[in-house]
Length: 411
Image 1: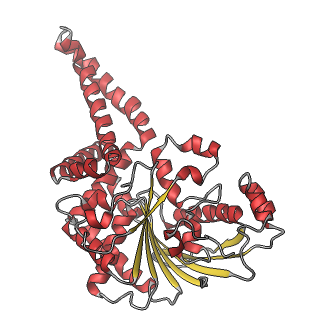
Image 2: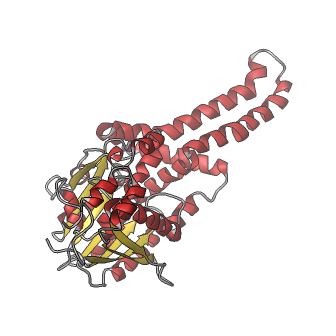
Image 3: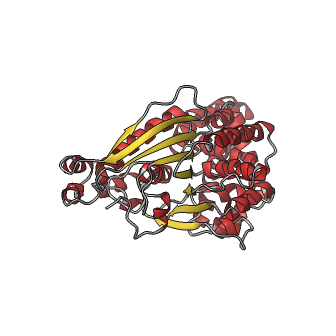
């Protein structure tokens, strides 16, 4: 198998309050972890001045055999023995250069979180109602009931708090006291909501999830001019990035970023059906939330663009899913459910987070579903079937991840 010497990566980030600089810093940390675990060296370059989206070069290469066991020992138990035995140290002389373009949507996240608390709550419940009316919730529970619970949780939690707040406010009247007593019970109820519930709810990122669902509606309906213009602008930027010559082009996306990626790549295919001709392209959706938007009845354009991507002969679609991640559509064929059962289907890659982390580390994060959901793009403690850094900067073609028995490093 021919190793990759030069790669172009377009990574569409998840719905997080992080800009391109912050995502690059995370990538650098994760790459160092991966390199220590697998026994190679990595150098993450500085952001390129004036790049939009923010881009940087990552270079990976063979690490000397005598150095690998030391680094591996620091990374995870047992990794040193593998490195000493020559596992994961690479074949002589390989080196891979990858240019990473971080297509973040922090500007949209900031816009959705810009209002005061009341306006964010109202906007969130409006999005909830719109998704229900358009059949989204019904689709969630039909295809992935855990995702349906993820959808309902922040709204049920907030609705319960609002009901409790109202009960505190009317308590004096309810027990037969004069309505004048509500002069103190009303402020008390407000204090409960502001100083007790809101700080508690932030443990679960409730208002951030409200904004996430508002974005899902926007990407499904495509009825917001500012969002649509932004997508067109990103498509132009991605088109420019694709002009660089490379052995392989990886379009990766995490969570909500998969819907953004589907729109952007779909826009390019609508304008230039042969834009990928002669290129080796891998579209890797990690913990994809495409169906979060596509299951809405109004998301006809998004579903059409999913079909365009699936039918593009140059694109190999890998859909990376995780059993213990409730915020993805596990074992759900995204292309078929989007209305394209006759099109080539995305190859499902089923991973387990517990295989990537030490037992202690996994035990620490397993109850935090948002943290588990981020693991797709974070560094590993152990050598595992999936590694985001190797997918985007490793020496092997990204397509090797389609086969669970394929080597992740040259032997």
